[in-house]
Length: 147
Image (cartoon, rainbow, N blue to C red; front, side, top):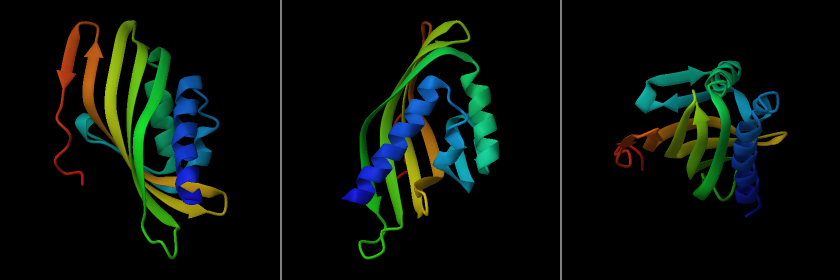
């Protein structure tokens, strides 16, 4: 159970960094070869440094943001050697993006690996489920290609 708690803390630290726009703390959450996928926006970013640059650019569009992590699940790949795990986390983001009141609901699908410093993201995939920007609303079904 300790491994699952460590992963929960990793996910919470990510949201905390987003909320504070503390991008200097974000690199410690990813492995050097991590991948960030955002299928709905055709984004496939490889490498921790590229991920941080991408997230910095995206967050610069928000004058204020709150990312709230809701329910989540963690599955250890092996009970005998719990060095890898997967997870799914539902979240909402709300704030002001480019002077427009914006609300986002979505799901992160993650892969984690334990390093000498604890669990880190090796892959994060974000799928948009709901977006309200001003009066415009978009809703998507849960992605059929996720388990």
